[in-house]
Length: 64
Image: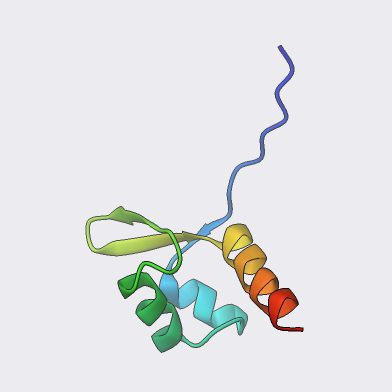
């Protein structure tokens, strides 16, 4: 059984904001509106960074 799986790159809101992809407030708004999925550990939201980038790329591709 050979399964190719990769471990998702999970980041907090502040860690994602430090990458410069989106401002912290925009990320928090997207989480509140459930635009992007997250896993919660208590009050801390962990975001799959790769899926967030894919989502943002799909938005820019559909607007072009």
